[in-house]
Length: 501
Image (cartoon, rainbow, N blue to C red; front, top):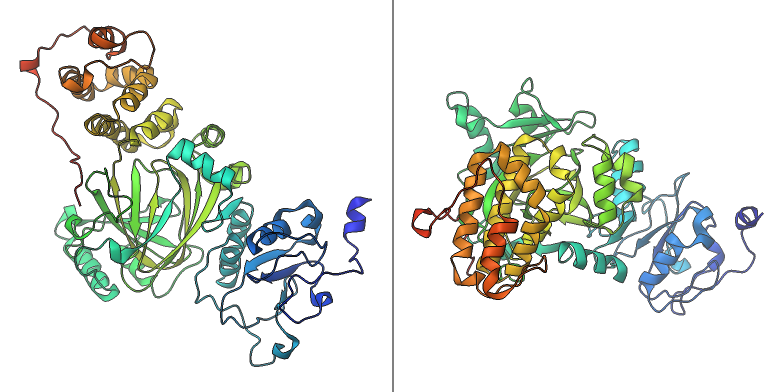
């Protein structure tokens, strides 16, 4: 009976603010797109008041009172004109009657301004003709806007990922003048041409999530101008001389205590292409160079609940269709050309390309990154990412362990090592080269001043007894016991040096 009552529009309506002149009854009761201005603080349907407009938007979207009304709520963008009323979503242009829409102003939304909320992203995908099934999957995700993150969501990210993703102005990251779209396109075509005689320059064409050698790379280049909704392509392994490691740096706010940028990768992504829910093997930073491009990121925290959900997919595709609606701590981001995004270590994320573009990405380490590796590997998620990525993940764990010790986070490094001991012993038995490197790294640590007076995270030893206790209890167990003296150790070549801005 309660649902039946909600479907009947009430006779009384409430003005959402005191400054706008319009009739509240003009607001449609169901299937409406509502543009909420910054000055609005009162729900036009139930009269409940809020301290700011963002709370009012959340109330209209999430409140049980209005669930059956199927409302879509967006922020007001300055200069946006009213758009065309459709059968499914009637536009509510919350302005004075003097500005009623006319034949010349009826048009699709103007998305030239920044798209920031989940609802605005959905409208963009619908307008641009994305696959309806994919749009519905995206619509079903619980995503907060980057500029309106609830306190409980931010706390989850702080606890399990050390912080939330961030957007940066890419101009703060380029050391040299960034290449233009024309220069990038020319360099890509040049690499494709040279790859015919040099196999090291062959790039990978990704079709529906997998490499496809039957498709020529020039078809992906062509899709920048002529997108293909049903067969969008991506081009990986671009090694363009006009984009090099030394051209990029971390912006202030991320560079303090971080390693140098490493593992620079470049790809071409066409409109309609997307990536399934996944995690990267480190702290990630991505930049859209050139003058064109738009990407939507759905990011999720590495909470125990999300890790359990991700593991339940057992590496299957279409993870968002399967678990997306149940994941917590979701935040959505939009990056355009000239912008960059930082993704905390191993956070789950999926990406949609709204405008075809090039993307430059690189990895780096922070002293606390080692905790992310232990969380992912101890949960067994490495078993579902493929052999090459799994091997890379264990190699990067050693790099993160070393970097944490070098930068004063010894306890975090030791805690992560002990937490992973069962998995690393298993891995060491099958990978003797990795085992030798790991033992060497531990010996270097135990012979250094950093190990003096340490308290073992297991709680069984501290002070002078720590070194012997760690060797006996927490060393890797290999096929036979080995003893190393300090002179026999060839310290592991350090892949990550502390970044000094």
